[in-house]
Length: 276
Image (cartoon, rainbow, N blue to C red):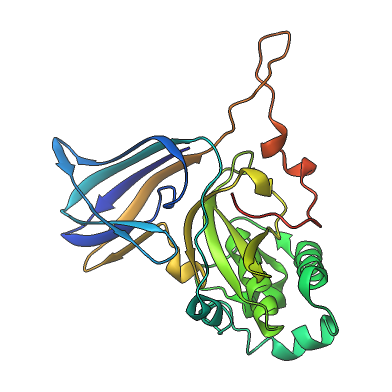
């Protein structure tokens, strides 16, 4: 997994990044650097209750180059979900207004619960929303997306979360690295809480859920932004994200084949899958 960000800082500014693999991922190697000319910044790492790792630093005016590279091998560990977390993920949030979509959800998914509810919501969002890069606004919410029928991964996740919460199922937002994703970028999915476990729902169906690597977890995109800042101007000049699964086999021509784990066409989206 790699992430590269080139930023232009207009003045001294408080920067908070969420671009690294979350706590609990089995990291084989990892390198995160913040450089500005000859200067190297050492960020403060803050870990939240879900294992999201935030890296905070005070940057000065000028160009800041951010580089991240990591290798993961194996399955992530998952912590126990507290009663408070479950309650938090039942409540409406900024981009997931479950109270505003309550009537629609109750009519459309009446009588459904458990796995059947998850499957129905996933299918509805996947078939009723068109993936439209460049048209979605950063302030768009689940209500906006339901009205327009278009968006990007964050918008799909918000609709899934709002509908599930309206049906009394805890749901949360997860930012992740997604091998095989096209177009490649940071990816966003939803997770639904059922019988003591969190299950991944990717309304875009553009990535195989079995290869996702968690970056951040929260109520919605406001909690999981890859960059937030306070007290100054920040311009994003360039960003490049990549993630891939190392193939187990090779073709006769020596070309590596795409492993099944990162091929979205091989994901059975009706099945329950945990982000591991």
